[in-house]
Image 1 (cartoon, chains in turn green, cyan):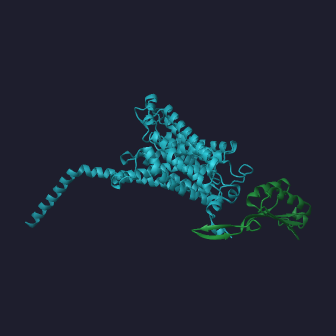
Image 2 (image 1 turned 180 degrees about the horizontal axis):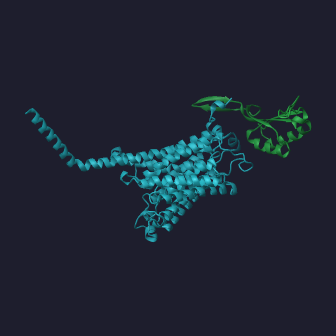
Image 3 (image 1 turned 135 degrees about the vertical axis):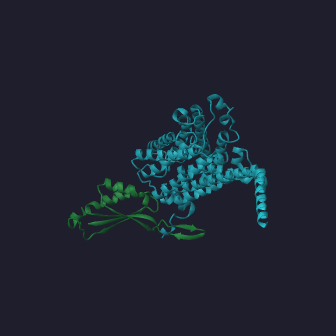
Length: 113
Length: 426
């Protein structure tokens, strides 16, 4: 069992969702987050006061998967989120120790589904 | 004795007063007339000024969060540019009145000429405010401002001049070509065709030449940021509209309750038609009210209230249907739907005055269908050509669109270097 975490450009989210659905992956948790990578930041100013902002709007997608689906998920995300410019984001794959479906109390691979 | 003296002196004083008022009656009542006209028009001008707050918030709500600041700055800056160009060029061109002369003469009694300028400026400044909603989220600030300046300084004053202003003999004089050919002068009481039609038909080429926003048609990813702000903008416009229409009378003695009730009926007709056709969609319902108001301007002083209701209802339906055709079938990315709302409903309003203004449909008459049709279509055609020429020339020289990266991060950060809610920045 794995957790796939993808940090992507907010405007790619619709495409990434569609791409994942097409690949048969229909479970995910999504957060709006702020972060920085190679893209750098920008300057904001209000009434002449300038502030350096380096954390940019991103969207973070979390998907729990059984091992055989990890590759499919990663490919689907890359396909939809890639524009070839700095700031496209990153994908992290973590091991997942346990998963419990609350409704049925199933555990492990069955609970991930 | 003392008492009697008091009575006599009181009577003398009283008769002196009576005598005074008989002598000065004429000048007193003329002072009252000119000052109440000045006040009447000023209230109209201020109500129209308030409509620009409506334009601003309608756009703030209808664009994505990253373009809210741009919507606000655009509307207030364009009001500024419009005022300057209309004061020095547009108003003298349309009306033949120069306000740059000696302050003791140019303003007239109670400074009414200055107030009249303020009122007509409110109409003229609607032109860039209308276009702003169509070109939102991707237009370059400065080239769009230049286009607005050309429209308020030259294009709109020519249309205003031939319909309401100093060149209006052909269309609006009883002995002019239109009246002698079709039996009635051109009737556009508050500017369905002259103001809204012009703005909407200028905006259409702007939107086409800009092209759609990035990814607009790749998925259903374009969202609006705030229904409450959109609705607030719509309500501010609705309230101000009663100044736009009623105070178009121009003098207190010409105030007409019919204009107010007709505006109300058309607004309600537009709202309910949009409600029924759109299955209670918030964006359509709030713009449907505006569609009714756009359409009722032209004939608001001659319709029967039930006729006004029909004009507004047809406009509300026209807006919903034509917005969907424009943005979905033709893929013209008109963000707020300003061509259907102001262009088509304005054109409809100009023509409708020739239909529902007729006595056979309960109106007070004095209009001809053919006359209304010809001039309204003429205004639309002239505006559309002018829009293509001005935006086409700007596109070929300075460029009219933000670059891809600027559009992606949003016009707020790209142009104004701030987000709508700066505390969100980390």
